[in-house]
Image 1 (cartoon, helix red, strand yellow):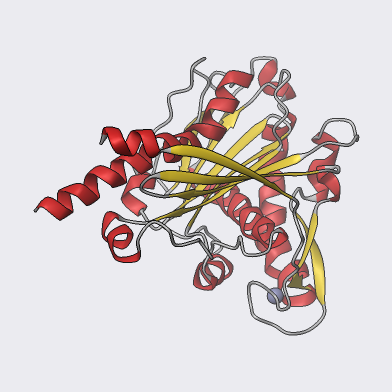
Image 2 (tube, rainbow, N blue to C red):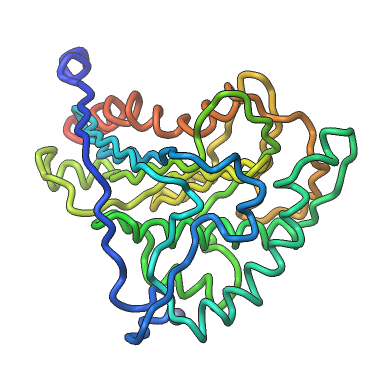
Length: 304
Ligand SMILES: [Zn+2]
């Protein structure tokens, strides 16, 4: 193990996002003219900070037995302008996406994003049905955002179809929300696609295989005072058993997979430290823990 630890290293590469827009509607496979979809919906723009140049960040991780390869991507520009040409106009953008996702979400999310009433001490109840609506909106945005970066699409087509047909996130996704009072933390969108091999896969394929795809993805979206965190991975039990422990004890509620719990909002507002911790917790876990854990699992398999 010590040897593995010594060999274990972190590497960063820097790259620029090359938008590779979809050639077909990402939800229906429709091959006609496509329209632009905002990652930050137009109705959220008035809740965002003053317009100026800012970045969104994306860190790509390949977790291997002896190392993690990381690529840090920082894209300039205002997040309001971030749109992806990936959906058909009639059936999707102006159809189920508007009627089934945006409109219901807007009603429920606008007060959470504005946050003003809650800072004055008011509270509200977020029912399981409302949690599903928020989770669906968040998943839709996460699915669309993936198409900004070539080769970074981690969501399978069947999961996008599931969202469209059921107006709910895929069952294997995990989604959290929390009330967030921003200080100086700069995150608006953080994205970490990752590749995770099980010990058996690592044995079979070896550790020198260069990733051509990712099979998991962590993304954080902050809209006004609403903090949203989405994780998807083939390691379903691992992701759904994942727990956060925010350093300043800010509230973070899991809204997907569904529970029958009613959330009393806001609880305690998340601090900058809480936001940064949650946004990077699994990312750090993948880098610091998965490699050594995989190494031990592979050695156990070898010796059994
Ligand atoms: Zn479509």
